Length: 150
Image (cartoon, rainbow, N blue to C red; front, side):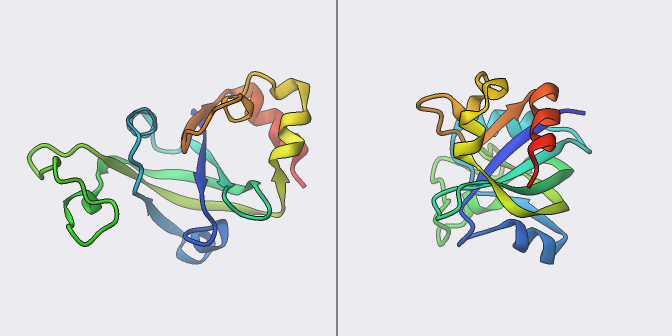
């Protein structure tokens, strides 16, 4: 099993939305490295759901990969904000995965708390200039963060 962190803006999609839907496609990723990470995900991989661009920035809960990478249909829809005119059904450029709900945390584990923890100094999330919406988390980092859960 591998571990990941996926960022979302909670006014668009939050851990509470995943809770209510139980399973949801994770679409709209338009960064090649983030897409490649999603392509590497396997069934059962665990994911920290990270709320960004909001008042309480940080990890809000956990999801699980329940369907591996497949074409993100929004790339073909001219009405979608994620439309890509260079993509075609024969040659899709973007993928998505489906996530299932695992747990919502009672409070967000803040980015400030994560950055202040020396054990997480090598984590991609806390590195200066790291803006990826999908990133791997090492097994050690995952276990350490679970120990910090609010």
